[in-house]
Image 1 (cartoon, rainbow, N blue to C red):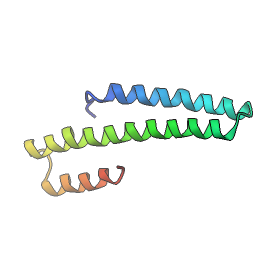
Image 2 (cartoon, rainbow, N blue to C red):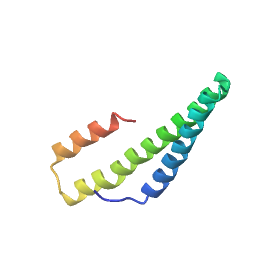
Image 3 (spheres, rainbow, N blue to C red):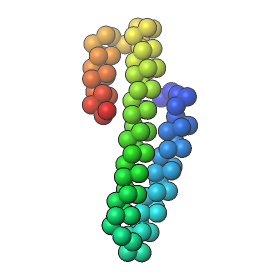
Length: 89
């Protein structure tokens, strides 16, 4: 697997989401309001969604584009992979 320039930013976002999740667990254990908890859950969901979108776009821009330009996999395989990964957008 190749590391892309976007991976450090994705890791940072996921670590931030991880911290939020720990905080949410504490909020639940501390019987905080459902509104506060829902707001934090939304922030985690948004961070993970953003990380996923960045990863998928990066894969399309670099891996699939490279496969097409270099001919390292067949056009059918590239299209199949493109269809598979775009399901996650």
